[in-house]
Amino acid sequence: MAVPKNLKKIEDSKAKALIAKHLNNNTGWWEGAVGYSDFVYEEGGKRKLIRPGFSDWETGIVVM
Image (cartoon, rainbow, N blue to C red):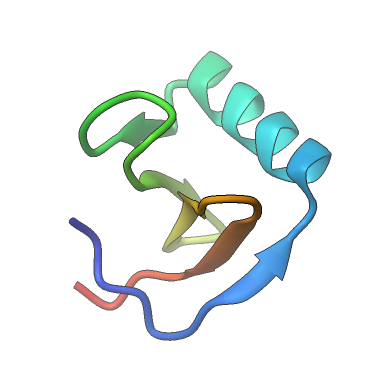
């Protein structure tokens, strides 16, 4: 599981659009079960994540 430096809320539609974009470009991957685990992607020379929650999504920069 990726360790985030910080986390902030992200809209559902924006999170799903980022996931689709990075899956299509082969710059992102699920770290476990699709839709339930962290989605890690590379953007601007940094690794970032999108983490699904119970009713919302979170995003942040990965430190490990």
